[in-house]
Image 1 (cartoon, rainbow, N blue to C red):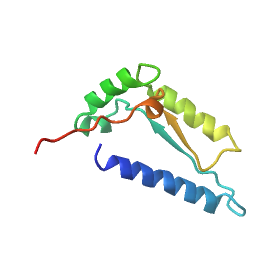
Image 2 (cartoon, one colour; image 1 turned 30 degrees about the vertical axis):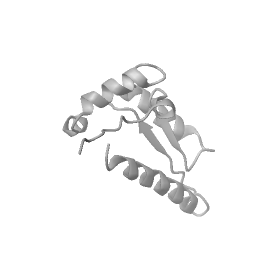
Image 3 (cartoon, rainbow, N blue to C red; image 1 turned 180 degrees about the vertical axis):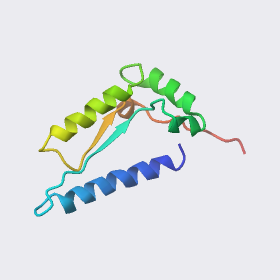
Length: 109
């Protein structure tokens, strides 16, 4: 996970800032983010330990399964039509973010 935690927190902060800046007239632009669980994509194949992340998510999420790309797409479509929502990060991860987190690696030394 390493750098991903701070990177994701920074992205969520940028979403809130952009929503605040771009929401009022003359722009009236809504800004939201979707944070999904691990999904098998071509890009994901380059992430070291990705299969372990998927296994961990399946075992520890509230739904005890991984989410699909279609489910993430459904969430994006929902946000696109939800004109009263802005500045939010919607987690589509089967409840993993509410009950679990990445396992910490402890190094002997």
